[in-house]
Length: 166
Image (cartoon, rainbow, N blue to C red; front, side, top):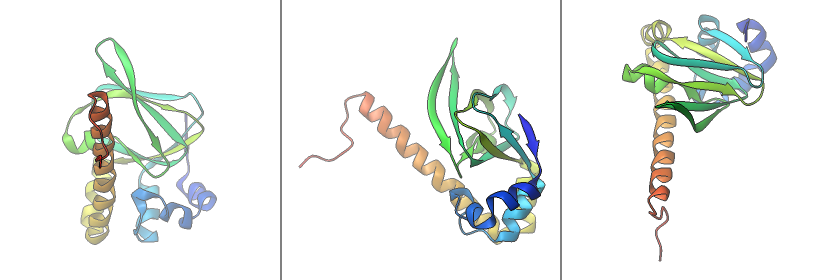
């Protein structure tokens, strides 16, 4: 794992690419740039991981490039519950829910992650209130899709048919 300079990431990926990520959709370029410069960007090689158990969720990540597999710790083992892809958030639900971390994020390919602390998140609210609202909608939309996906998995596991039959 290595820390990467925000300026280099912005130059390499480009603002058009970053603006196209679901978490950053419809945000002003200046806000996206501010988020990257104010956060911490890390690069994970395939197979590198971040294990976080019982720590307070004081930040969340946005996958700028790559993919993570998330393993939730359950009893004495870890269970793969989902993959986080480009533009998706990791850990926002834990930070907002004020719950402790309980899993491991494993890079399935080389990945770039932007970490946004709760302090930076609050500062965005103060400095860019309208953009903060858009950012919250983007994050809430993703959580809504995640809930829908989990409901389908639960339903299918119980024999429920997710499609209405004629």
